[in-house]
Length: 537
Image (cartoon, rainbow, N blue to C red; front, side, top):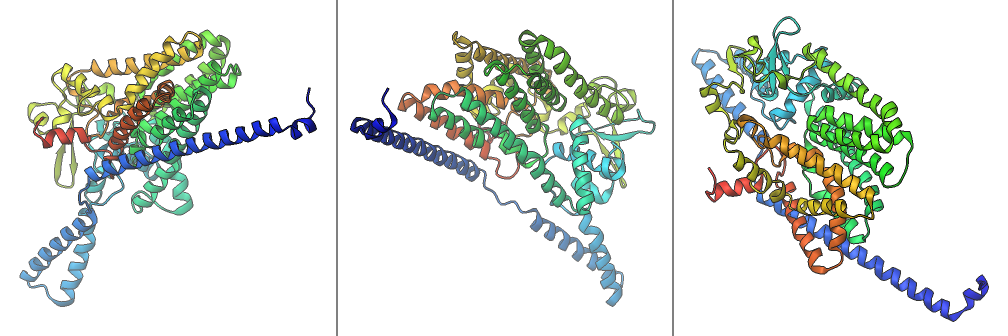
C-alpha cells in the first residue's frame, strides 16, 4: 500500500487530484446553472400568472367613497330639517362613527370559507362558545363577518348559528388566538388585520416550511440526480396550490403538512429500515390529524395502517393505533362540545325540510330588521339564486372531464402531476426496490380512492370545490404527488428534450398557482379564459 507521503509526492496522483477537482468544479457549476435556469423559469411563470390576473382592486378607496357619499346625504337631510351649526357638526360626526362600521369593506378574510373558521375562533375566545350568532347577526359586524358556511340547530337548548366546518382545527387555533390576545391585547373584533396576519404567519408559513424540509430529506433519500432533486424542490416551492392558499386560513394546507409528516415517517420505516416505534407513532398521530382536519385523507390513514400492520404489527397495534384513537377522541369531543352530537354538520344536510326537522342547512336568521335566508336552501328559487358553480355539475362525465383536464383540472392546471402519475407507475414496477413499490401503492390507492369518492357524489356536491382557483379537494394529496415526481424527474435528467419538457410543464404549473394574485378564492385562469373566448357559459 502506498504511504501517504508517497501518494502526496506522486505526480500521477497529483494529476488525478487536479482532474477530480476540475470535475467537481464543473459538476458544481452545472448544478448551479441548473438551479439558476429553474428559478428563472419559476419566476417567469409566477409573474405571467400574476400579470394575467391584474386588475385594480382597492377596497379602502371604495370605503371612503361610500362613506363620503353617505355622510353628504345625511348632512343634506339634517340641513333640510333645519339642523345647523354645532348641532349639525355633532350629528354628522356621530353618524360618521356609526356608518364607518357598517360600510367597512376591507377585511383580512377573503371568503365565506375562511370567515366561517375565524368566526368559531373568535366566538370561542371572546365569548366562550361555539355559537357564532353574536358575530354574524350584529348589524355593525355583519358586513365583514357574514358567512354562508354555517348551520342552525337547537341541540344545546336554544337555536343558534354555528360554523359548518369541522371543529378540531379552529379549536386548536383558538389557543393560538388566546395567547396572542393575552400578550398583545389585540382582538379579532377590534384589530382583525393584526390578529389574522400574525396567526397566518405563525400557522401557514411553518406548515409550508415543514413540508419543504421533510420533502428535501425524502428527495435526498430517493433521488438519483441533481436535476431531478432540484426540479422536485422547485415544483414544491412555486408550483403547487399549497403556497397559493397560504394567505388564508384553510384546512387543506394543514392537512397536507400532516400527510407529509406521516409519509416521512413511513419512508424511514420502509426505505431506510428504521424499525423504531417512534416512527409508527408519528405516522399514526399525523395521519389521524390529517383525517380529522380534512376527512378524505382518512384514505391514507387506512392504507398506511394496513401497510404498517404487515411491517411492524406489534408497534402498529400498541403505539400507532392509540395515537389514532387519541386524535379521534379529541376530534369527536370538540364536535360534541359544539353540536351535542358525534356526527359533523355535513351529516345533517339532506334529511328534513328545515333545521327544526333535521336539516341544519335550511334556516333563516335576522340581522337588525333584515331576515336573511340560508344560502343552502334547496327550493327551486333558492337554487336559482345560488352561484352557478354551487348548483353542481349536472353531467357526471362533464364533471370528471373538467376535474381532470378541464377548467378545474388536476392535470390541465398543474401538468407536472402527469409526471407524478408516471413516477407512481415507475415505483410500482421496479422489482429491485420493494420499498418504493410500497410507497407507490400508498400514493396510487389514496389518489384513486379520493378521486372515486368525489366523482361519485350527487349533483349538488359536484361543484369543483366551489369558487376556488384549483381542485382543492385533492390538495391534501400534493405531498404524495411531489414524492412521486422523484423517479420521473430523475428520468428526465438523462436527455435535454426531457428536461425541456419538465421546464414547460413546470412553467404552466407555476402560472396556475400564481394566477390568484391576492385571493385564492377565485376561478382558475383556464375557467376565465374559456369564459372570455365564449367556449363556456
